[in-house]
Length: 285
Image 1 (cartoon, rainbow, N blue to C red):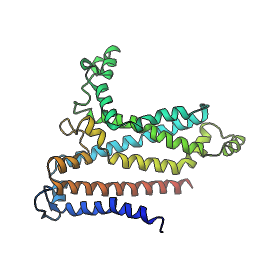
Image 2 (cartoon, helix red, strand yellow):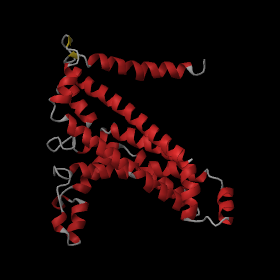
Image 3 (cartoon, rainbow, N blue to C red):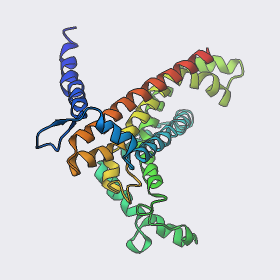
Image 4 (cartoon, rainbow, N blue to C red):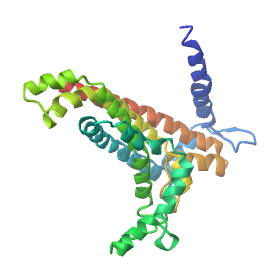
């Protein structure tokens, strides 16, 4: 208990207490400088019933979460192929992981340049023009119909290597003796992956999925760098809406209500994912 105490105090001071303070702020009307006026649940009433940006931002956040979960099966496939067919896979795994350690500003500026119109040197549009698909060219980050999907792809590209590394480590920790014993019984290739690799990877898959979902729910920095929530709020997510309300509109109480919702939303999603994995494990057993 003595050894755990410093970390516990650090967690309470910098995580738990600020959450409680934010919940308290969500019950007041406050610009950050003038006197706080207690309004009870009025901020939440406005948030759920009158804010035209809030619910679409929730749906976009869920879309990014689903796109993030789509990384997991791809990461598992890549990890299995690397482990099985590449003699020294460490270099490839490190290469896939490289975008994760890059600055978000660097990634945002890189992909903004890629998504630029062809006349401004945008690589994607130039490739479409040169391959005869000029009708497919778009102003990717300025088109209200495709901007959120363009952002989702960048988030997918940035973090796929993170999940490849996690899954690859999990695959490497599975004893080869199990596969050798299974091969004697005729379980090789896809059958071995289905009955050995995937069941033994389930704890790793669970962790990877929760990290992907919770991380996507808090998506903020890349969106701010690339679109700032535009065009016309079509790439606004919960965290960017919270930031704009708090620091651009100086509605600290209202922004705190959004942040409280986000905390509860993350908690609920974590509980739901744990229950789903527990149910899947019970069915499998």
